[in-house]
Amino acid sequence: MKILICGGGNGAHCFTALASACPNVEVNVLTVYEDEAKTWTTALKSDELTVSISKPDGSVTETRSKPSLVTNDIKVAVAGVQIIFIVVPSYVHHIYFSLLALHIQPNTLIVGLPGHAGFELQCLDMLGNKSSNHAIVGFESLPWACRIIEYGKRVQLLGYKDILHASFLVGTNCNLQFPAIETIQSILGSKPRIKVVSNVFAITLMTGSIIHPPIMYGKWKNWDKTPLPVKPLFYQGVDEEQASIASKLSDEVVKTAKQIQDACPDLDMSQVVHLSDWFKSHYHDEIGDNSSLMTSMRTNSAYEGLVHPMKAVENRYVPDFEYRYTTEDVPFGLVVMKGLAVIAGVATPTMDKIIQWAQSIMGKEFIIGTDLVGKDVKFSRAPQSFGLNTLEQVQDYIKSRIR
Ligand code: NAI
Image (cartoon, rainbow, N blue to C red; front, side, top):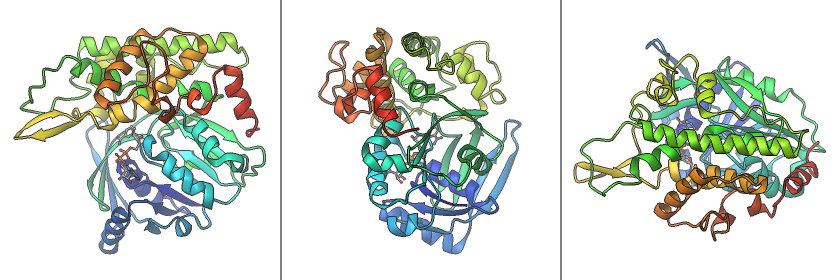
């Protein structure tokens, strides 16, 4: 099996180290940033890539391996590959989709690891008629929490999720020569266990992108702009109010799923569950106390030591609102979910408050009042940004290319 991993960040490093260590898997890496390709290639000349894996019991193991090549040349990168994993923040997906649209061979499997809300629609849109020649898998999140320690040389895997949901769409003209999900599972290893979600509406409402924005909003909505002496803990610092906002947001998402289910009984939306249940199933082994949503986040060993995104200012810290917890999780998370809520006719007062706060700090406009009519909706991946305004239109659009 020959695979391509697109990206040069934390997730791409972690997956490259794990996949390159699999027998019978050859790994190419493509990063469009020339400096990343050069730095990583240089690092691999002198040593292998090491992933240090932290276990819930506190022990650490190490795996060392090497990809075949790291390049910024798409033609070299895609030659002979059967699966392409896109492992970058979702605001970068369009860059890779536009390259793939020109260069990939029919019957290639495209995997968003993670996909984030709207991945499938954007992929179908940007690949155009060619999308019917491919299969698409979109994961709800990244399988691991991970951070680069030294570029091209060392990455830290802080914890695995236990399960991970994924969409699976096969183009009308696609003839994959291998079992898609089983093959991805064998490359990922035993954890997380992949669970296929039966439709795109459900994966769009899965919870990956609803975790960070309510915590950011709860923490910083009344910030008086005074720099802080230390970086506050992100998950271990979650308080009752932040957990309550996250819980109410999750209620609205679950209500949207239920409404879609009622309108389209043939769609199975049962996998869209409340955030509390999501934590219990995805981090069963890592959570010390799952008696509440707040404790589930505070006692999750995979999140240990993770801090709020902060920028240094004269030996003190201010929040970094350009970090992906807002710039990714709002346009490619909440705004997409808001789009489905609008289509399903569900009111979302908590989601609206978070989007209003986030768009003001980002200098964007997605909603005006509670309406999804802002000038920047077209840069999100809400169904409306693809001209899809009803459940039937979304279903027909997908069915026109997918079996
Ligand atoms: P990252 O922030 O490390 O990715 C940065 C990389 O993306 C860069 O090194 C570059 O290769 C590429 N990139 C960024 N901006 C670009 C641009 N304008 N043009 C071209 N390439 C660009 O992201 P990370 O941590 O690898 O995360 C990947 C995805 O996984 C994100 O969607 C993230 O939300 C998600 N995720 C990450 C987790 C983690 O622990 N790292 C945990 C859960 C989800």
